[in-house]
Length: 171
Ligand SMILES: [Zn+2]
Image (cartoon, rainbow, N blue to C red):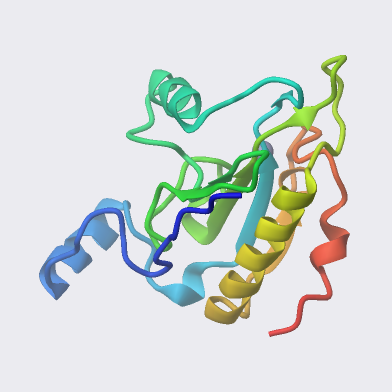
């Protein structure tokens, strides 16, 4: 398994100075600070577990929806490869209207061979997801780990498994 390293706190782009930082907070592209992160939201890509859905495909699809880049902060492929697409305090595009107070993680899959919602996480994905959640837990102890479908008003199966198993992760 090849896992890309992902520096947790550094943003996709360098924020050069405090003034620039403040400007971006005002513009709405950055959250106010670590305290703003109230949820760590887990998603699935809603693609079939026997088909590849690469970072490039995800990027293309999200750009087609008008996003600047991939809307999730992290993407975990079936082989356990983790890629980061947004700075941690950068506002993502994955769970309106909670984007300004959450970090989004998506795993590749979520649909079985028949195209029906299912927990299709591989052992590698489970391991990498857990590792990532433990790191984020340390940085954002106040944030609640939830599945997308647990957020109020969401009418989707995403992420197609019960995230209650992460409720017990200690700080
Ligand atoms: Zn989702």
